[in-house]
Length: 52
Image (spheres, rainbow, N blue to C red):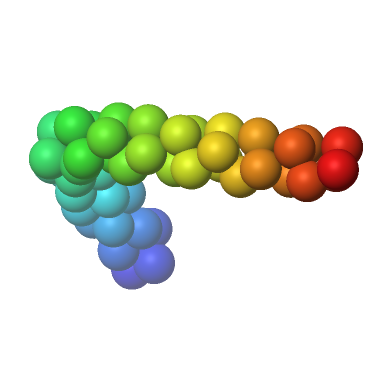
C-alpha cells in the first residue's frame, strides 16, 4: 500500500515540478536578476560606508 502511494506521489511530484518549472522559470530568472542587482547595490553601499 505504502509503496503504491509513494509511486503516485513521486509521479505527481514529477508532473508538478515540470509544470512549475515551465511556468516559474521566466519569473525566477527575473527575480534572481532583481535580487542580484539589489545585493550588488547593498554591497556597494556597505563598501562605500565602510571607507568613510
